[in-house]
Length: 272
Image (tube, rainbow, N blue to C red; front, side, top):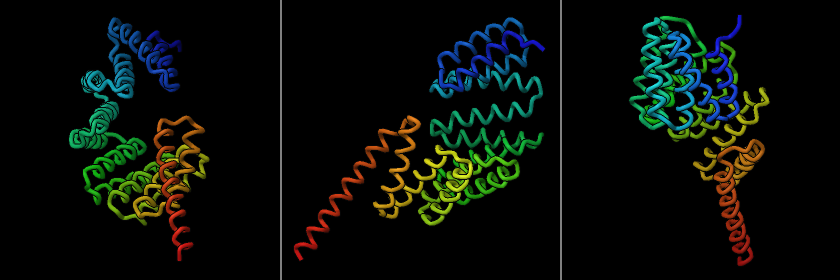
């Protein structure tokens, strides 16, 4: 079946989006929106508005993203699309969580979770539970966060999402780190790393190493912190990641302090 003009524009926009060309993606979606407004096809309009919401969300245009998502939500309610409603509620939750509005984000996530009672989607539920875990962690409800993360991991395993499982173990490690349970944090980070290594996923390996560096920093183990940071910086440099400069500065500062401490130690031994 031949694609409609709107579908072609959305597909083109998705390709630009996946490559990080947000301006070009937005232009494609905006043109698709013009087509859909004229045709009046509610399902095509829903897809296009959702894409516009997503591109605005990643571009930092929160109010525009929220307006698009709210219009999507109204259309989905008219269509009786429970799965779509749940996804849009989760997107609205993400918008507020990204802005640090934890309680508003949590409210949207819980509404999305309630909607999931009407259909079966273990993969989507696993992601939503990890989102709720993040909110609980950030608001320092650690036991609740642990419950959400554990449920998420169980679902990730059930659907065979190993990458997602690695991500949630890393999130759980960060939770334990904030909870000052450093051994538990390290154990979760090591589990995340082991999964990432099996997947040969260097980006996720770098994420696990970063948490390990933070664990050693919290415990005052500068040598081990530096060892893991070196690995992180290698990954940052290889993939041109945005935190390369920040992590390099941190590593260099740490290495300078370690060199100074060694020098002082040697001087003290010489004096004795």
